[in-house]
Length: 165
Image (cartoon, rainbow, N blue to C red):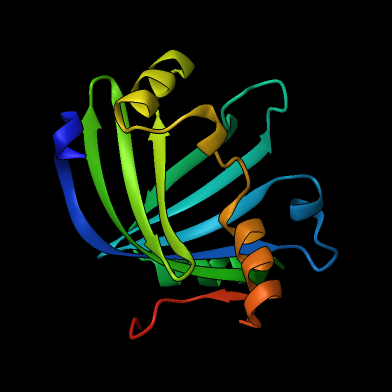
């Protein structure tokens, strides 16, 4: 990243995501997600709408707010009738490169790069990183993990790092 001109803005840390759904999987089947994230000592509650299929890049509505305590947010979500559908951990570091915010996620199934910017800037940063549109991955970590588990026999409900809490 730094050789392409990226500037480290957030050092690597553990991210622990918990995705919730209704018993009939209404969120997943509609392409939506409800997430409680623990990011170090910070927490966030996020709703993600369905992906816009007309875009070459992954674009979707996201509504997010910080929470003082992710465990309490989780308890509230559970009390509302949602259940834990998926848990994922990753080590993440963040960079700025031009007008783009770039995150690098180290997951149990490999390393992924996410570029957040307008589509033209995503294309420019993609080229700077030596990648192409063919490298774009629009599937969610849940979908990627389930395919990976089908090949490896890992638990499809838990994408946990070795040695992480």
